[in-house]
Length: 162
Ligand code: OFO
Image (tube, rainbow, N blue to C red; front, side, top):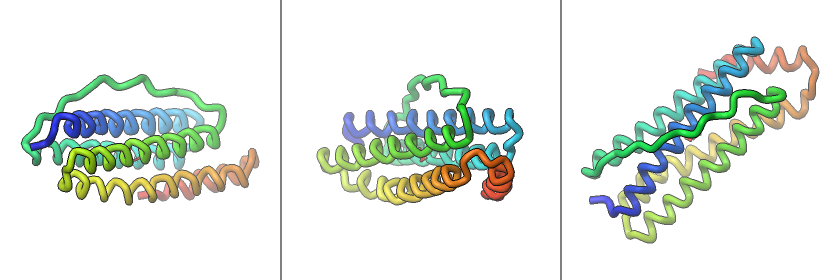
């Protein structure tokens, strides 16, 4: 059985993951509205990953015979000045999520819950990849600056994400 504090933390992480879904879908909406549909597709793929993260926490809480409880989501930002600004926000958001996962892992150690600590290992690794992939796009967009043909090329490349 999960300890109360641990369950509260895991339920809160479902909210964080669903909020991530919402944020990336909002970014997809922004990109689609300015016809950067490759970036929009990248963000939609990212949003779908976030939903799958939320469902991993959902499944784990049920496996531990505990109760999933949802909280309200914050309204996501809807507009960005540039593709770079949107991806910078995505990178900052991934850093925030890494911090949340690390806090959960610390809590699992404090409440002596090795099963949850083990469950969280996948997310610790995943966050390294998520930070790396968003930082990579930020770095490239910084190199490109405002050159329209380069942004167009980048949009095509990002649209190839599966
Ligand atoms: Fe972006 O990894 Fe979940 O939130």
